[in-house]
Image (cartoon, rainbow, N blue to C red; front, side, top):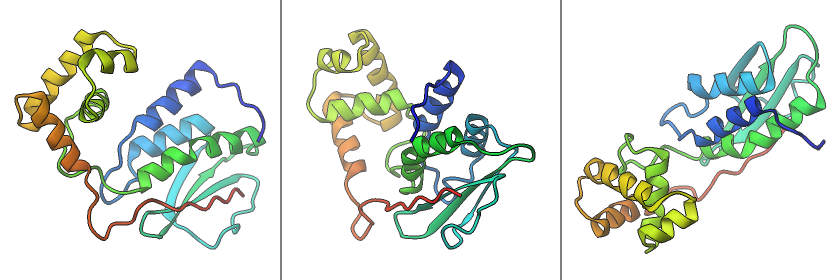
Length: 192
């Protein structure tokens, strides 16, 4: 893979893609995912479908990524350009975001956590559940302790709790594995 230096715009797009949460039912066909990938790689169209046999898209104006869901179903992400070819850099960009796409395929978001929790609130709750203090969480996240306190103040009503211990318990119970669920996605990559 070639070394890639990302522009500020590309860095913002990658950050936005990594911050997305899985959506039940259609994790990769949400407009946000398709739009971010299209803008990052610079293509005219993005298609998401059940995966064909690997390696069937060989045209130079197509770029494909085959992924596997946590249930073993194949998903193919196909990028199309009307003019020009996809470069090795384009392929490398798609490979770079493949782990984020796999995570989006791994399953629906935790059902017991409200969708209104922000990513920052989830991060703070995750660290809180490990037993860290606000000061420890702030140091870990490189933010002020007052920022951690505010995230917790906003998260408590969303979780229906009034204290740290209850918030940690709700968060931990929401992350408990579901019996019979797959443990993680297996992904196979194919770049045409």
